[in-house]
Length: 413
Ligand code: ZN
Ligand code: ZN
Image (tube, rainbow, N blue to C red; front, side, top):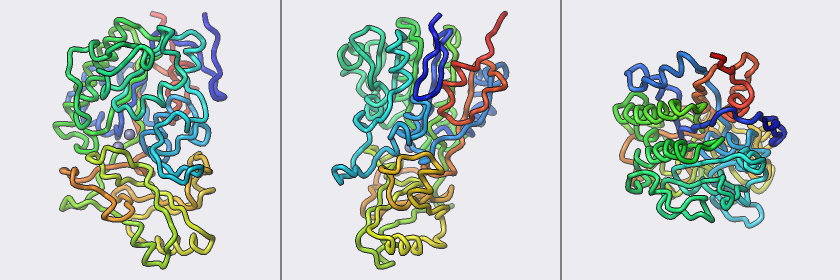
C-alpha cells in the first residue's frame, strides 16, 4: 500500500478506490434540496440516506478561481495565491485574468499524487481553469488527462494527455452558454472512469444555469437531474463520490427584475476622489452570466486620507455589507495581501457591486441578475456517497479531499 502524502502541510491517504470530486459551480445548497424535493435526484437522495450530507462554506471572495484552487490544493488563497478570477498585477500595473499558472504559488493535490504514481483525470467546462487545475502534471506519462469541454476537440497528447477528447463522447462541442457544456463533463468523466479508471478525478462545471435559474425552477431541476444520472453511473463503477461547490448563488434584483447595483466609481468621484482603481475580481470574458457584477470589490487608493474618504463615501450606502482594510480582509478570509487593494467592499445578499454603468455590458443579461462573490454566497453542499468518521470536522469546501481520503468509514460488508 502507498504511504500517505503531505501536500501543502496537510496529510492525505492514498485512495482505496477511485475518488471523484465534483465541484458544481454556483451550487447554492437549495438547488439540490429543491431538486430532491421534486424527485429529480433519485440517486443523490440515496447518497444522502446512506452517505454524508453536510453544508460547508466557500472561500471569500466567493468566486470560481479562488475556490477551485483551494479545493485542489487544500489551502486558502493566501497559500495558493489565486485571489480572484481577475486582479491588479502589482508587477505590471495591469489588470489581468488569473488564469495563468505563473500566478499559482503552490502545487495541487493532483500534482503530488501524480508524482507519487497516481492516475489523474480532470475535466472542466471552460478552458480558463484548465491550465491552473492541471498544472504540474506530466501528460506524456500516460497517467494524466486534463481538458475542458469547451476545447475538447483541440486536445493533444502533449498538452492534455489525450488526443481528441471529444471522441470519448458522442456529442458535438457545446457552446459556452449552455447546460450541455457541463453535461459533456459528466459524460466524459463516466467514460474515463470506464476506460482509464483514474485514482483521482475532478469534474468542475460552469454556473451558467445557476446564474439564470433559481433553485427549483424547471431548467435548474433538469440540470440537476442530468447530473444525478451520471453520479449514479460513477457510483455503480465503485467510485467514492464527493460533491461540493465553489460558491453559492443569490438573486440580485428587485421585484421588477432590475439588478440592484452599487456603482462605486461615481460614489468615489462624488466624494472628491480622483485617483482610485476599482477591481472586480468576478470579471471574466463570459458577460452573459453576470455582466461582471458580483458581491466583492477591492479598491486601490493613493493615500491614507483617500482611504478615509472612500470609507466615508461607502458609509450607510444601502447594500454595502462590509468595508475592510487590506489587512482585515486578508486576516479574515485568508487572502494574499499583495493581490488585494487598500480596501475590500462586500455587498449584501441582494446587491452587487459595479465600477461605472458604462463599464458593464449588460446586453447579454436576459434574465433577472443572479450572482455571487460576497459572504451571502458562502454556503455550499458537502455530500459524500460514504459515511465519514466523526472526527472529520472541517466544513470548508477545500476540506473535501481531506475528508474523503482520510475519514471515510470503510464498509466491511
Ligand atoms: Zn463559480
Ligand atoms: Zn458565476
